[in-house]
Image 1: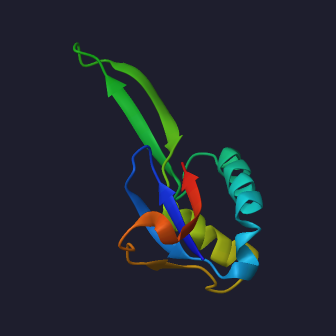
Image 2 (image 1 turned 120 degrees about the vertical axis):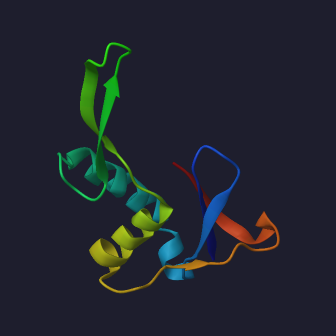
Length: 104
């Protein structure tokens, strides 16, 4: 089955998901979201952001989540499957073959 992961736009990244894993994708998406909420400070899925005002003073500085569809798939492969079960594929000619759509 083909999975499409998009980020606030119709464009996306495409992944092959074996049928026997497809039914678990939504469950894993929720677990991945919960996992992201546990992250603190230095981690590959976080980035420190600052805003400096016109006077050159720091308005705020904090860590934000920074991840993509391939990070979700990598997390599944490492944390859930312990092997490469899902993988990136080229964009199909149209989305008629997409069976799973996820918007982050």
